[in-house]
Image (cartoon, rainbow, N blue to C red; front, side, top):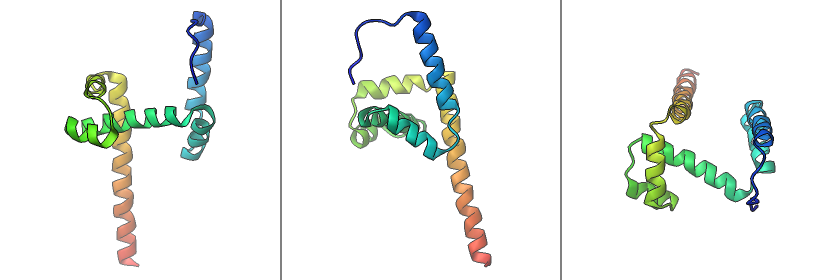
Length: 119
């Protein structure tokens, strides 16, 4: 989808973005979020968003630029921009959510192993 070069009126832009953000906030499950994204975003848009998150995560984990470039097929400029974004409070919050998800996944596996061993 190509965006029109004509600018939206500020009030219209504010209203439609508020609606978008509320819809995202109202998703109740990963499946619902997947359906939302698949219906509203092109495959390229979904990939771009997922790659940005993955690159932020890789940077947080200390991966080298060369590894990230090879894995995600992106330019050093994109990596540098995202590296700078890691200092922003909003991006830090995203990383915290990813860390919490990783922690939960690790402990879920540990708990399942405990019960499988004791059964």
